[in-house]
Every structure is written in structure tokens, then in C-alpha cells.
Length: 151
Image (tube, rainbow, N blue to C red; front, side, top):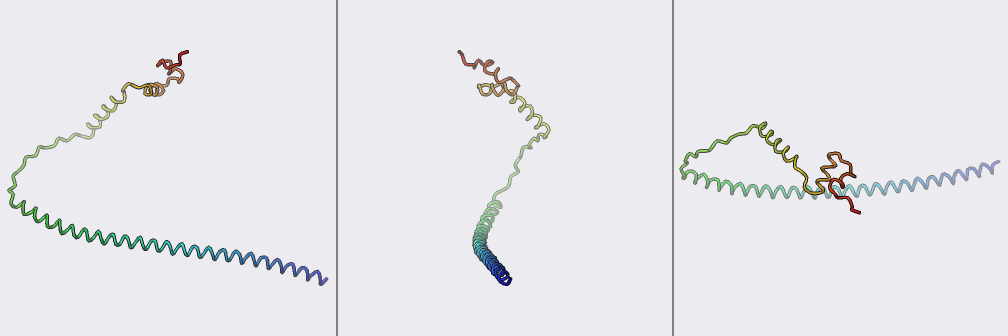
């Protein structure tokens, strides 16, 4: 009886070692995956910091350019103001613009659009498409345009 119990205990010990080995393999796989994720996170942080530094440099350059152009614009506006002071202003007669109501313009557009839609087909493709949209059967189309094969 004791020998049977010893055999059962030995088998249970082997099974427990097998499960311990499986758990150890899963744990190492999980640790490797975690290290890869940390590495990817570090790379993403580096790329974002480089991108932000590049944007900051570009903004600084833009601000310098704007300050430079502001000085140039200020100098030119002073020159223009001096020239305007020297030139006598003469009143200019402006012709008043005639305004057209939106409703009138829309009606005119609809009339021209309806005229262009009623255009007769010219090419064979246009004629076939025109006949198909009118509901003609596809077999009657060649007969109506004498496109049937001659025997």
C-alpha cells in the first residue's frame, strides 16, 4: 500500500514540476514582451521630443522672420505715409455698382441650364446613351441607327 502511495506522490511531483516549467516559460515570455514595450515607449518619447524641439526651432525662426518683416513693413509704411502727405488728394468719382437680386440670378441660371440640357446627341455614344435613358430596348438601338451587322 505504501508503494502505491509513493508512486502516486512521485507522479504528482513530476506533474507539478511540469506546471512549474510551463509557468516559468510564460513568465519569461511576459517579461520579454514588457521589455519590448518599454523600448518602444522610449523610442516614441524620443521621436516626440525631437519633433517638439524641431517645431520649437521652427517657431523661433518664424518669430525672428516676423520681427524682421515688421521692421521692414514699418519703414515702408512710414515712407508711404510721407509720400501720401506730399501728394494732393483729388476726389475720384466712382460709378455705383448695380446689384442683382439672388432670385433673379437663380432664375437666369435655371433657364440657361435647362437650355443646355435639351441639347441633341451628336456622337454615336451620346445617341445610344440618349436612347437608353429614354427607355429604348438595347436590341432596337442598332436598328434605329442602322448599326446592325449586315449579312
